[in-house]
Image (cartoon, rainbow, N blue to C red; front, side, top):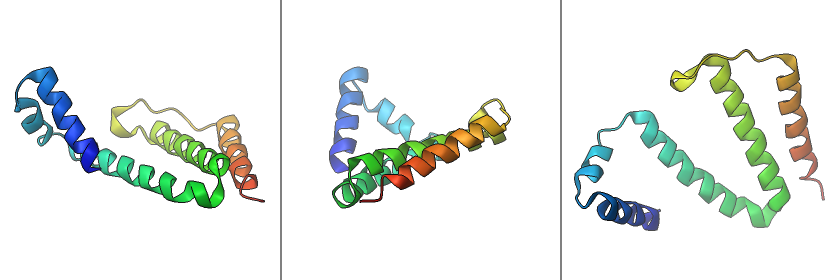
Length: 107
């Protein structure tokens, strides 16, 4: 995480040629900061889980979780997005994908 932070600051310094962009980052909405922390958590989780349950299971669970989160964002219109109803074909697709991910956990 430290390497990512240092790399991000270095890229901003090269692109903007000042620390103004770095200081502007501290004034962003809280949900952007939460997204960054969750991204770090996801990377650590993938690193920890992959040798234990396998790449296929990790990728399947990751994609199923992302689709479920995206469906919730669409359904409730979070983050300023347009509300999109959660119809049964979309729900069945998410359930089938989650079931497939669960099946990959079997050895």
